[in-house]
Image 1 (cartoon, one colour):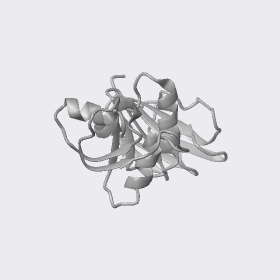
Image 2 (cartoon, helix red, strand yellow; image 1 turned 45 degrees about the horizontal axis):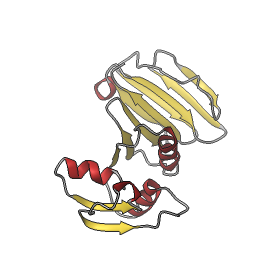
Image 3 (cartoon, one colour; image 1 turned 30 degrees about the vertical axis):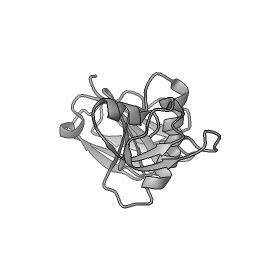
Image 4 (cartoon, helix red, strand yellow; image 1 turned 120 degrees about the vertical axis):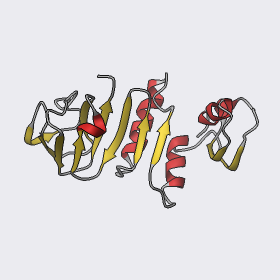
Amino acid sequence: VDAGLEVLQKMGIEADLAIGDFDSLEKKPIKAREVHTFPSKKEKSDLALALDFITKKEFEKIQIYNATGMRLDHFFSAIFDLANFSDGRIEIIDRHNVIRVMPSSFILTKEEVGNAYISFFALKENTFISLEGFKYPLNFYELNLLDNLTLSNELAEEVGTVTITQPILLMITKDA
């Protein structure tokens, strides 16, 4: 997506698909097997356009890299774009974090997350969360928008169970 294409090109990797307005490439050639160019004046971010396009196809997992960079406005926008897709198969990944929207209750294991910090954030009102097997357990807690009670939790047991009534944003921060 947009400037991410330049990162791939520097690594010598040809993209299968390039999507964006490519305003970040400063008129460098776009090298990809398939290219979808949008005007720079548009109603959605380049990432949102890419997610709209790719989620219409069958996929096992979508991993988004380089979306947590130096611009906080772009980072927030990426989170908002991700939040529009309640699908645990779409992730934003950087060196320290994995962020995904979980549409329903799920289990985390020590094998999967190690000693990472695990944070949960509500995406909708009337979200209730229960946490079992965590350092800070919860029992049907109403997790409101902008509530940070569930910041930086950890697994206390080999398996942790997360029960939710609405999709939530899950952030796993490694290198804890």
